[in-house]
Image (cartoon, rainbow, N blue to C red; front, side):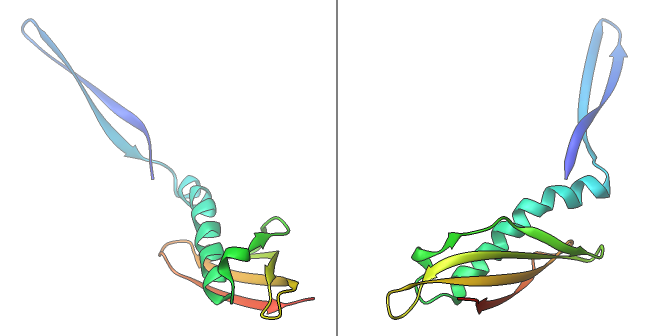
Length: 111
């Protein structure tokens, strides 16, 4: 992730030039910024597991249950239509890599 830019001022006879270049943010900032991206990827994975993905609705906030530096684990509940047309509640647990664009999902019905 790129944050504030560094600046170099260079001067020659009668000419002043300002050069800007991006600098890297801290690793902690980069990991924090990936949280939303990871949650979106996890939601996408849940929808691929559902019989009726269009009926997916988030029922609770994402809770981050673990972050060991290499991956984050999120849990949340959602509602979706079941094959008999009723609305059911599900629990999702997603493990998302902090460094790669990879995640695994576990989905189960709770009601």
